[in-house]
Length: 174
Length: 334
Image (cartoon, chains in turn yellow, blue):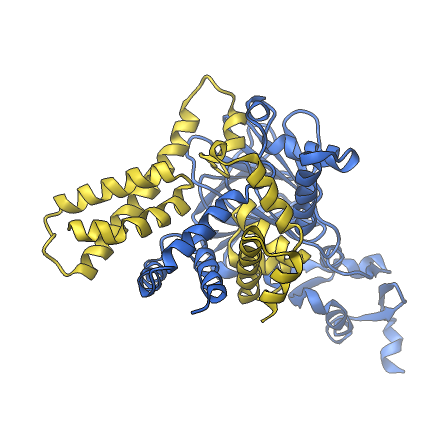
């Protein structure tokens, strides 16, 4: 059991923070999932089965937490509804922790990409549009949309690692 | 695996995981990948940090900005417009991206007084946007919707054209769509509303909606479930419900336009939302002919040419317009 925790905790927290958009929440949910798994009294099963249980419990807890969040927002009467509306769709709980510089840098680098690439990326990232929705709106295949978005990410990463515009483009060509 | 290939794989996993919420097969495959090499998960986490840092301009506003009651979605279009005019520093970068998103959507948000916000698409265009509560709306060609959100109600008016809503569940705040005389009330469902010249068509893909007359405390006209389509005729104020295939609820999204016993004039008006050349009904009386059929929005010209086979009409290609004339009774004998 402890091995399960050691081996998968990082991956689990990663996945949960993608879902919850908060590392702190992700860690809490992961912890709670372990506790629940221990209580299930099925800790003698095969490792792969246990892992599947663990991830399922954790993802269900994440869904619950997202729901609670929405309720909490609607429940607090003192603050204007508009404020919640501003927060609700993106839910960037930890954006305060990100340096403005870093954010600006990422935006600048993304702006170097071809238009369709940027479009697909921002629709997915900013609007939470699914790949199939983006494919419909841009009239391209879903495969193409996935390609655009992951290309934007790889390009960005290369640039942030110090590659020049030309180097990054050249490497992506191959 | 080279570093670049690993980066690409990590990016691909990120897209797949963020797209398929909770798909266990995808997650299991991803875990396999994570375990395949000690560098895989750290690379994925770097990608994830990047994803997190790519904050959309709206969310990147300073805390004081967020604290103002008007911040958020409603002011988004304002800052977007202002940014286009002034364009300095971060505001310019933010505006550029917002302008880009607006272009992608080919929807043009227009600031309006009070809490209303309007979105429209040009002829042949279409748009997709996320409403403040997380509900999504896909808007068809030459269409206009106006949102009016309050703490008690999520209000949207379909002013023209097609709108397909995927409503986020919130029993405390009903999602109310007004289209002419018709009001559609949803809690959490997916449905399409089309405003035609002589009718309003509500088709439900998922869940259930209530339909009522929008005038005053209008009478309840019943509820429509998934796989049902309600046609409300504006003239006789008559509502009829028919069964459809759920994926046909918003077939326009796949370029398929379906009409059933709709006057030719109304069909022409609807097709004009897609056609770059105006379709003109030259003789008023043929506009009354009832049309039933399927037309592909990308092949409107072909469909119109075939019209002469089923109706006593002559279709004339007049350059930038397509004219539909009555066929003289004697012309058939010549």
